[in-house]
Length: 225
Image (tube, rainbow, N blue to C red; front, side, top):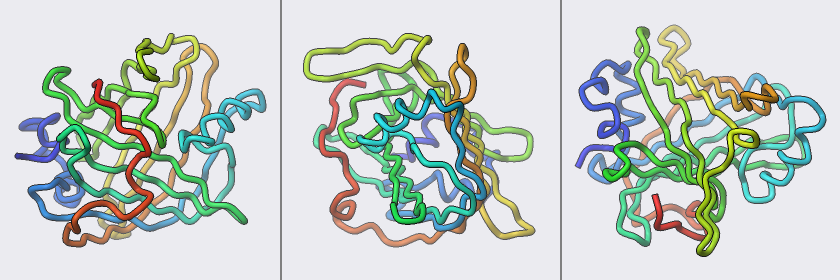
């Protein structure tokens, strides 16, 4: 089985920069986990009125309420099979703000039924988001978010555009600096920018253990894609 990004991109996966091919080729069959460590030059959020919403999301490791510059950063990409038997990859980002570490948790699967990557956000996977990856002319990976769905018990509703956030991610490899570079922007089409970050990191690959370290997997795993 190929990685979730290889399945989503198909032949275009070969157009990624070779360093990105290894990073996003991380999967159970690759036998590797990837940990990136670096610094976010800037972590930002929108106008003051968005802070209560960011704080609410921060309580479940969705989005980051704080802002700052030169923030130490870690991203942990560990593949495993979830409790529903699906190949899953963690995208757990930690931001070490002065006096407090904030996490932005995501776990991703490839859904054959939906024909795309599904990104489950937060500690309890209450939000499921469709992701649309593509490769740009420079060999960078660009990811755009699609429909958001909220799940809790029997509740399964589509998040209205009025209150939803659209994410745009671009990850590239800077050969001169020998580092990965990332830019993330989350905005609302009606209210403008909400949250984002940009910076760079290096990556280290390790052999897969039996599973993710304690605390990396979500508390609850949602079956619905």
